[in-house]
Image 1 (cartoon, rainbow, N blue to C red):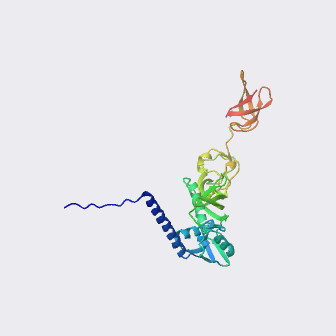
Image 2 (image 1 turned 90 degrees about the horizontal axis):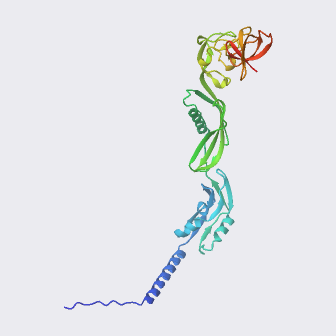
Image 3 (image 1 turned 180 degrees about the vertical axis):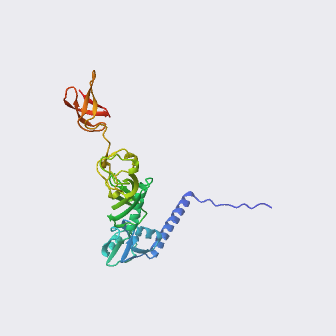
Length: 335
């Protein structure tokens, strides 16, 4: 049997182009008719809450219609939103004119607009107790390793308020470089989504308790201090002068400049190095120049320690001169 052959009709290329154009135009007209057939409705709310810094139509209205048209309508910009926690009022007639000014708006759009719209801005806040916890943690971290106990009182916050919604972070920065005791002030930098929104001041009185050198018994003026005269006791150093002594090694061997009662915290200005030379002591006066060295005998006219300048009487000339103490038996004169 002879196989039947199918004959395929070949269309001219020009006819194919014409048919494709007709199909495309028909599809486009069908899409437009479908858009026109779907009823577009915009209903403006009388009150709305805004999270961001700008207000768009989608934030204050419910929009019904084709998806692409809804997105385009929702993106209509209506201005900046109020500050966090505040509100602003927008006139309904202004909103309507803003919408109808769009030439692409379908003519059959239903628009429901109140007389005015109240736009509120959402917000978040920071509780004072949370700020105090941050303050306390900062102090504790800075004092870590010093084995110092502390207590915070009279805590105060200046500049706290309402902040935009978003991811919040707080950075504490120390004001000045003073000691972390007594009145301590910190700056709190508040960021929302990485943007600086506010700077606050956190302050408080910090009482710190540390071991200081105290007298274990009553001591008289000019006494040379021994280890048995001292003890270490914990005191509130925020209530003591800044020069309170915290090391017994720095005190033993010093001489008291005043009488002290038992359990007195020692200050640096209460003690002094005992004099190496006393008034009336015989000393060697050494005179020195780049080319000459002269020594003679003298008598100290005052007391002093290493480095002090005192008046000395030259035993040969009987004249008094100013010399610097260099050890327990020698003074030096520059000439």
